[in-house]
Amino acid sequence: MSIKKQYLKKNGVCKTTFILHGTFNNIENVRLTGDFNNWDINCEPMKKLKPSGFSQTLNLDAGKSYQFKYLINDSVWENEPESDELVPNGFGPKEFNSLIVL
Image (cartoon, rainbow, N blue to C red; front, side, top):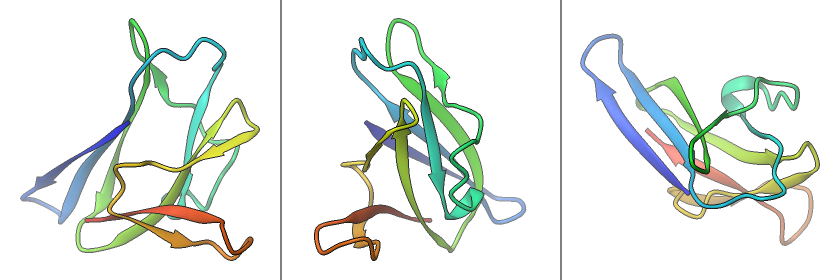
């Protein structure tokens, strides 16, 4: 898993690419959900990469931070280990969201 940040000079935007690397034998789809899409669990799935992995690029406002998670096969929530931080999400003492700071 990884995150690539590319700051664009115009419009105060950060082109942010979220990538899940590796072999995912049993994964049909991955959705990137978070503050940037109102945690929409029905959002378009991430693009499947060949030979393996998933990717999605978003244009996000620079100077802001966003909480997010990956939703795998519409049932399993996963955090991004390379996020800038993990923050409590209010669903329990050991429940966290990934945080990206742009």
